[in-house]
Image (cartoon, one colour):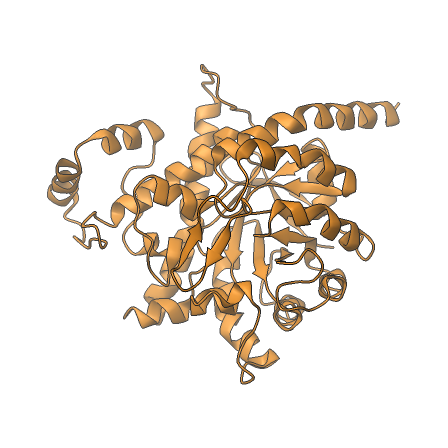
Length: 396
């Protein structure tokens, strides 16, 4: 049976044997966080880089861990912040293209994780979607340092979870602070995400890219992330059947000791972006014992219900969805085209239909925010109450 770590404090205190068991503890539904890079950029981080949000992993994370200190620090003038850290800690003075110290991105990253937890997320994902050993090596880092950076992405999320639990002890405001199971998911993007050319939105790779090529590309990265303290691996934005097969075989071969979820993306609401059948892709995940949930991410909200109804026909695993805002991505300009998506209110209006179609884990992807997640949390209150009531009555 698959094993999912159930977190009840600062460490894994219990072990549950399936995602379905975890969902029983969260009222039948679990909330995944929203866009990480979206929030980092909103706070001023410059992520115009092939590493994307993983660019924020390039300096030490052990700077300031509590939210109060972080907020105070971030309120200082940029020059004072930089001078203060350089004088006190003598850290690397690496800056991004705007001249802002990269260590600020790390501080922001933990804060963004916390923002999602305080909005009601039960699962937070590491900033490793576009982080690969090959990508870091292209920046001049050694294999050892590259692996350390991968581990750091998970450690930052785990630290945020610990800080959140500390805040739960003193819930004196109106934020959603509740001691509940929280999972850290290690994010694994596709080979196309590494290429940073938008091909994760097309699923079209060179004919030279074979099943073995993809397995070799992902193997060590998956192994390192799985050993970094995460509870589950999120194989995200999978654009084609070939890469799904590569991930499934790596899991079957025991590369990771923790389970994973498979999430595909679609641009037509019928197939995955490569044109491969969504049912055939889900069938690969269904056959892999270590895959504990399947679904769709980074796909316009209007396509989700139809895709979920098709997925439900071929899987017995919990179904997850975390769509983007519906905005269109321009791979040449490397930016989202504004005013092509839906606002938070419209996004959340779909939630009831998704749950009716069979979704039990839901959140947001690109261009969604903690406001989106908070709105989803509010929508789930009554559903969770009904689930808890029915569960209680069935035990009598």
